[in-house]
Image (cartoon, rainbow, N blue to C red; front, side):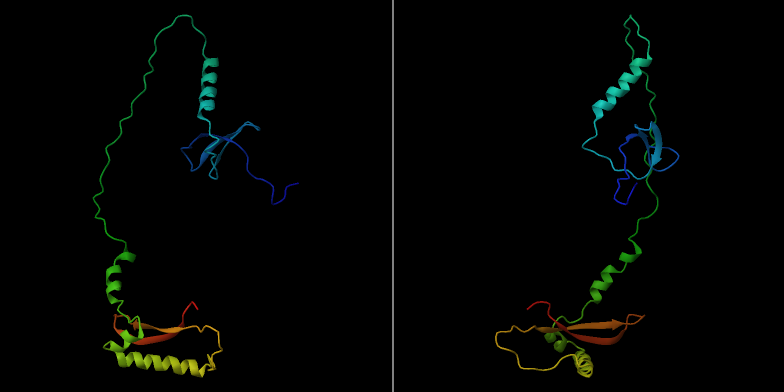
Length: 184
């Protein structure tokens, strides 16, 4: 009886790549069957090319009748003409998702610190955004002010600023968020 932990794989020999489908031709020696499968894991360390060449040579030699006279035989291998590589005429362009990458780096001029926000041209808008954030935190009862305990390290905080842009890249809002620092 098979259960879900039963091994579903079997050790087979690779034959060749099929021309009509995607996958590999395999030979299953215990059942003497060949089949096509797309799911395969090749054991590169166990791949023994010498034994495969020996098997092929033994099969070929057993099929040929033995001859006493020695004649030199050079097999004529037809050479296939390889067509020359063709260069594409199509103009290569950057992907659409990367097209405006340079523009976005130029637009990212939001203040990183409180000092930068206060020295910015829009400092009054940043102050308004910070006041709005503090009012929101107060109305939602985000914290309660208490005296710090001795020996307890307090978590710091910092302001994060962002200009929100509309459809035509005009500034629609100034956002300020008070964030706790992620370390103590």
